[in-house]
Image (tube, rainbow, N blue to C red; front, top):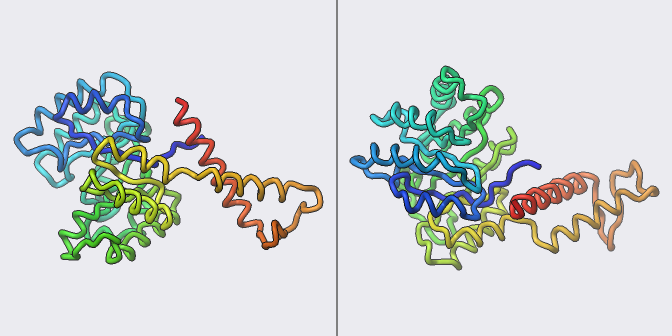
Length: 289
């Protein structure tokens, strides 16, 4: 089954206790953060803590967020990543495919490219303008997906965030279009107010309706909500099974559209429901692991 990414939680790399706790979290991926969550004078200690933490297995894939490739910390971060061997590297401030190529070349020289997925933070105006080019690089680079950074986009553009995120919707849909065109995962940005579960529910529901695969998180209490909302519901699974069973009947063989419970269902809906059921099975396998 393909991996699922309903919930990706950031954990500061300089917090050994948080890293130890993250080892058993129910998130679908752990983003060990060397960038925003770590103060400049703590970067070295964070890399050391990272090496120790990743020496023991986690219950979910580990993605390491390094500092920006143009930063003074990028080289040491890459060396730490090579030593720690995370399943993925999250690259902040990606603005073009060339940014990812630089990192891919470095990984290739260290014989680490095949085992390391690349993730791109979409958090600058240039990234939005170059989404198609960045997504297309997945045809030659191990780019796995996009992680949306709405906080940075708000800062860079001057857009004022509002609770319904209406001003961000065009950018969010642009990310979805680019991701779907090239088979990439699309992850929604964080909600900073981790105590506001009602808003988290609303943002997760909104992001799922827009087509996002999951949400990035900053606190363990957010995991259950993201995992639940980004998973197919029992009603969705039942409806999908009904559609699959209907198309499987001998009298419907080869038909492009059939009637089910008084409504017309096309074969394209069959493909959608098959994907939903595959996702449900993958989530069940993940939750039972």
